Amino acid sequence: MLVFLAQAAYWPALGSAAGSPQRIGFQGKLLDTSNNPRNGSFDMTFRVFDVAAGGSELWSETQTGVPVNNGVFSVQLGDVVSLSVGLFNRTSAYLEVEVAPDAAMTPRQLLLMSPYAFRALLADDLAPGNTSYVQVTGLLQSGAVFHVASGTVAGPFTATGTANFTAAGNQTYSIQTSSGIRLAAGTLRVEGSGGVDSLTVVKGATVAASTGLLLPQGSASSLEGSARWDAAQNLLFIGTGTANKTMADTDSAQTLTNKTLSSSGGNVVDATHLRARLLSSVAPFDGMTIKWDAAGSQWVPAYAAKVSIIATPFTPAGNLTLVSSTVYITPLVVPGTLDVNQIRYRVTTGVSGITGDVGLYDSAGNLVLSGGASSANFTTVGAKVVAVSGAPVTVQPGQYYLALSCNGAPAVRGNNLQAASAGVVPRLGTIALGAGTTLPSSIVLGSIVDGNLAIFQSLNE
Picture 1: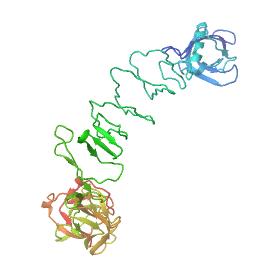
Picture 2: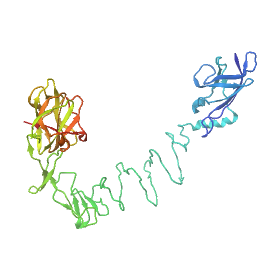
Picture 3: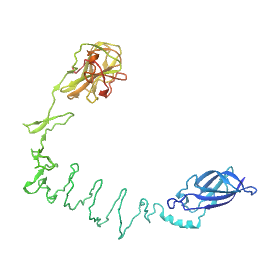
Picture 4: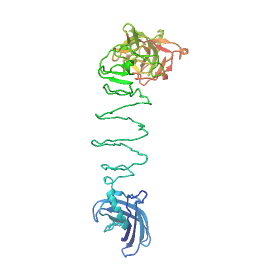
């Protein structure tokens, strides 16, 4: 049996100046039941409660192997589990000591302050959230007001985070400087109905084309005589006197006439002129080109020739036995706009149960049309017609690649250009595929293995 005889605690103010040790020195004496001092090493558990008995445990730690010499031991509370600032923000706290293997000793010890710790009572008025003072090393507390009356802020003034400077009521917030005000980054914006009363001079820098310069309406709106809004004509004038040039109104429908914007050299617009012309009201489409129509004095779409049937350029001269799970790629040039409804090929040796897929890839390797999973039949001999999914699919002129795959080894009509021809026709070759019944949504054209088998296929009937 161990008996706790005496204790002394040195209680510093936690959360004081940076660098203060947040630990408590604690000494005690252990006696046995015969009041003899103990010697050896003991495991001790220290706990802090809010009341003398029962209550809530606020903090605890266990220190193992605490040396005891002639009954006396000394520890620093907080060595194992840190002591928090808020632990002692209450009227009283009690320390409970437990020395293994015995139960916790009673009664608990009331923790008291050292004399100089009374000064720490002032910290109650400096707790985070109190608005009666200003923190100078951290953020301003929510709700605090920083008053400066007839004072001066010397040296650089830096505001971090979101900063608001407000002139309440009819007061004027003013900045006086002899060297100018610089906005190093971000956007300078004026909000509200007041706007900017006067803008007298803009000099030095250039207004970026991406942002522009906004002028309010009214005859008095000007910029050093170089830009003036005429509300009566709903136009923006550039220049002064008879040299005025107008810009098109963007607020209402206008006829864009053949005006020329030019310069005499050395200005933003080159002397080669920048001309604006009407554009035919046709909805744009991918790959659309335009040409000048002198008769109509406007730009109009230049439509490519329309074609109805396209076939691979290689003469069918034999039967080609396919390899399962392989995509056969054959280059194809589409010379005009083509509405594709079907893809055709011929089976010369059928194999029961064999299916596959046929389709067309564009110059980026994207599948633009196909029959779909198992849409191609290789079971019987003869010409095969595969309906294109989502037909008709419109194909613009350009370079394409016909593709065919299957999950077996039938034979189809085509041309064996012989092994010596491999690599002569770019992108004529094969790509390994999984099951072979469905073409992938995209392929890497650079991964096509050069080959010599050109399968005979056509688009449409």
